[in-house]
Image 1 (tube, rainbow, N blue to C red):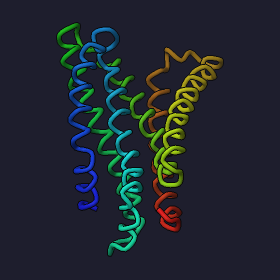
Image 2: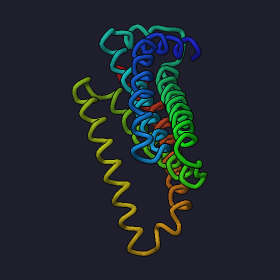
Image 3: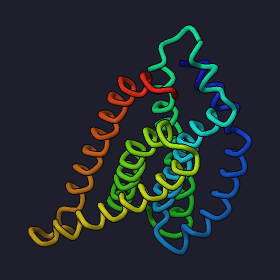
Length: 208
């Protein structure tokens, strides 16, 4: 799997440099307009998106057909995308944490509670969307996959807002926001794990 990860790293590294520089420039200003910790969500979602797009890059260059004859289980090719997605998500969140921390130190005292809330939100957004985006990237064409990713992001946002609204009807969400987001992050991780297991078992049977 290390070789597959290196292949994807070489594939996206040039675009990542531009993306990171743009994020640092734009994100620094955004941090002062809103909460500096919102950058954890923005960077995590932006970086992890690159992982899903490598599936389409493999298809456009026909590397997916070449990988079918490599001396390794095809499930490994699928699992590598899930590992790559997690690594990019972690990288994005770490970058958002670093830039947000600098902005917080320059603006006002860092708030650990606010940091926890945004970090939990980042985990929910990244893992919940990834659990759907990655299988869609394998199964759908490039155009449909991109549309699916956009629709998935909208659906996750709607689900998140709808869940908060529903909880408000039965409890004081603000009072229990820490627990709500913690449970949401754990549920998102479970969804991602289930998606990974199912994809690794089912997708190798398709022409991926």
